[in-house]
Image (tube, rainbow, N blue to C red; front, side):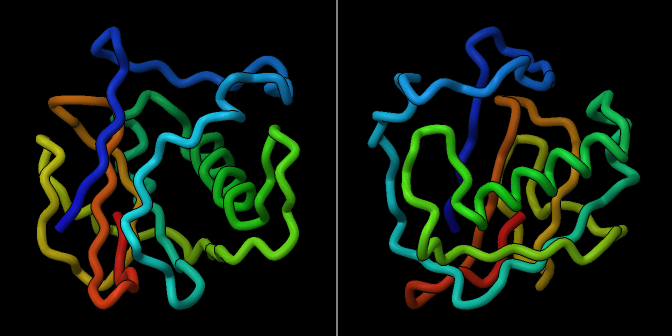
Length: 145
């Protein structure tokens, strides 16, 4: 069981759309500090969204779902602001509708047991602004929340 957490320096978070595209000269384009865990998705990542939790984020259902779907498309199509090739990008995602299930993690960001569904939801998080849990073995992801 592995988890990833992002934290703001200020301890809180805010969500806003960038006012302009990130220029190709952005220092983030040269970053290589990530850790490849060795897992791959064997097929399209089919995910669901728990719309009932959006009020906890202070966002609207329509805007948040639109932004998440756009991010999913950007990742799966290899869209980037750094000029990297988008050809042959092998990641695929598909939105499968609303769900009543929650992401399988505690408010402390600890991963719980998988439930067979990839879920995006909002909730209190005691340390950080976002948390991702993923499960799998033999080099393949089975689920992510």
